[in-house]
Image (cartoon, rainbow, N blue to C red; front, top):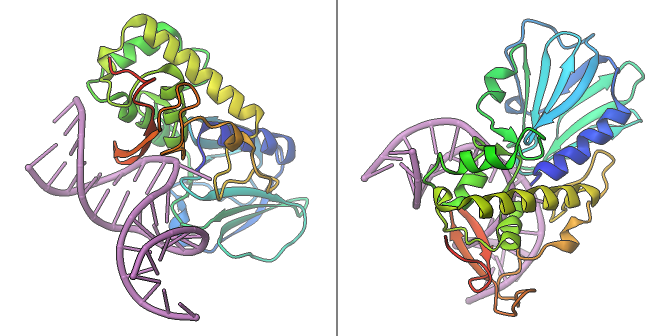
Length: 267
DNA sequence: CCATGTACCTGAAGGC
DNA sequence: TGCCTTCAGGTACATG
């Protein structure tokens, strides 16, 4: 579910709502969701900063860190009342002003790590797709380190992080590149253009508060609206917006994959 | 190194 | 209604 724009939307809201609050208690309703290797007790710690790398949300606490991954169906929801546990609530944090942060996750794939060493998790994650340090030259260099197809390259979080299945298909469509193109075969100009497309599409999706296909909600429980602007994702069989040919939907790189075999070229 | 399959989970949707 | 299959925004791990 949530990819970079959805995670960014959530952390911007959390920054406004829960920064500098202190955790006074928390409850775990599904043990696999909450993993701790920290020396510190969570109760009594204050949230001093909220950032993200790719799809990982990072709470810097007065001591230790919480690293949160929403995976497919996780939602972080701010709740100002002492509401009771709802269906699929996996972890609830209670703050010193009695407000709460609820981690609700239908499929139980999401994870919250309490750790003193966030680098153990984050060092394997590549540079964030919207990081200003991700220059065209750096992107070109990363592409040429890999012989994978470009769809798998972008889905893998180890080169650049933040893109998932929806935005990979959208970016490759806009850039006119088939998912089958080998990363290292993309020439410099095309690579620069692809990076520009990636940044544009992600930034536009953030303006739209993310894409809600089924389960994604922001921290206030609201839908995003970027699903109204998708050009290929979930449009299998429908006419391409550029050329009218039917959009292909196949299984590729382990995921449902949408593309136009007229507008998108293999390099 | 790369591609593919499976596991982790629940629920919605479609076929019969 | 109900039963079965397929699919879903992600990632880790095993196997060729």
